[in-house]
Length: 281
Image (tube, rainbow, N blue to C red; front, side):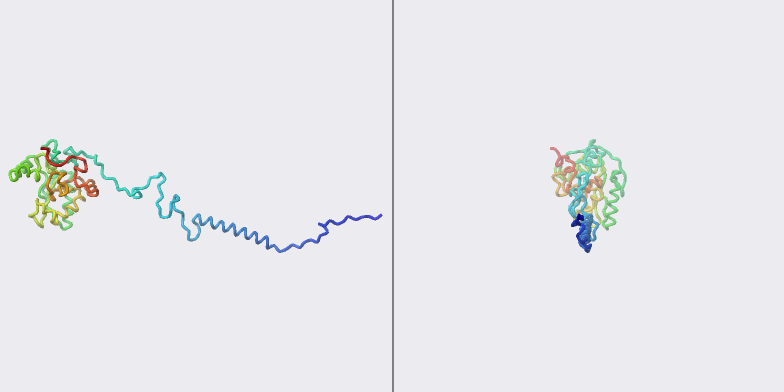
């Protein structure tokens, strides 16, 4: 009996394939590493870590743009707004003791014979709150080589009555009203107004030509820095009721004076909405 031996399977009888070179696998692995590295490099550049990179603009704003604040409000500079001026309701415009009292032909002092507290600056009487700025104004002019003189300051009710009566005798009542206040209607009675003069052309003191003197030009350019207004100018006669007086300065404080200059408002009447013009006849 013939014994049949099992036939070798193809798998077992096949010649083993010698191991080939490993480069295909290595190449694939290397490619994978390069791909991962490249992706990592791109991610690093987005994060601003690569050479020559820069961080992205804050809050997603374009380069050079100012990102809005977290509460959605920008700064005053971003919006192009101007700083707020003084609170124009901070002081009364009718109380004679107020630094912002408005005295004109429609608004007399109340009472008309009001007498303020007074101190002396270079021999002239003014209110204590105006005195430091007046002294600083005169000192600043001296430092600039401009020698201002004080020609008038506080005038009480009786003194103003004498001044006004003198103008009436010289010019008549209607013309006197254009150049002099009636008693009780004068800023000088508040202790907040002064008349200045100069040394270069003394003949222009109390005259329109004072505005063209070195002293007059200096006052026009620097009064506000020291809290004063040139109260009666050619451009505001219809509002104030008085002919131009480039020598007449009214103290209101530095904040308000600078604000009025910056905004182009030349009268207290316009600033506070107080009636002006001529006397009621």
